[in-house]
Image 1: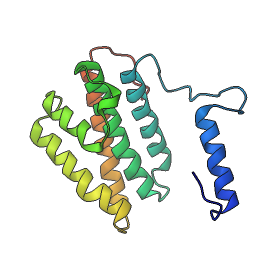
Image 2: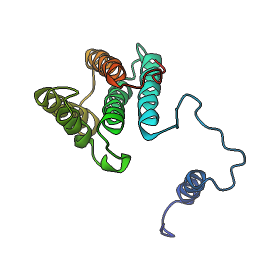
Image 3: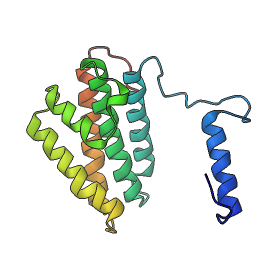
Length: 167
């Protein structure tokens, strides 16, 4: 609950955001059409597609922090899609970033060593660039774009039910 000492504009914007997520007072809902909602795994896979699409639009525009953030998101959504489809996981299992990397290794999607290296990449670099005050570079963003694209394509090919990826 907000305090009377909080700025009124922030409190009003917070109320509006909460109402939007509760779908109150916003008329006809307009959904993101490229997100497939048939099942949890299709939602996660197509979320990964959308994140990569945004990364493609940002490429060359100098938004390295956003690119890195979205690339890690695309990798995680892709691993989650695989675990949901092939591993019997539930979306509620993914309560932290580490779990999707762990499951990718446990399920043999990638080796445990590769899963661990990807988790370390996340911990040491995404977290540091996002929270540690470092300035991401064009080379880092480009490398993450390549990694996320390769992971997403590989995961899409490994899921037995094809034709869902929007890339």
